[in-house]
Length: 82
Image (cartoon, rainbow, N blue to C red; front, side, top):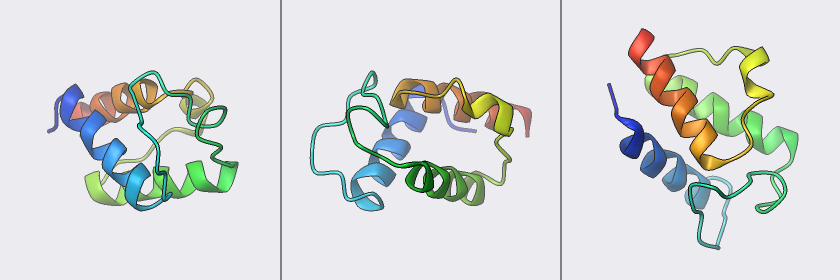
């Protein structure tokens, strides 16, 4: 099960590869406001994480995910449970 920093690095990698983000993505970078991700982009990112780690993101929890750090913390927590 990955730790927080591993989650950050993995999500950062997905963002730069899958979403074709060509700017620096810091932990406090807002996924929608700063990176310009649309809902479908975020859902595709979540789907990739679910497939990679064999987890399921509760839709209610996604409302509180705004930054890379939020997503990494959620990923870390969900992988600890599985």
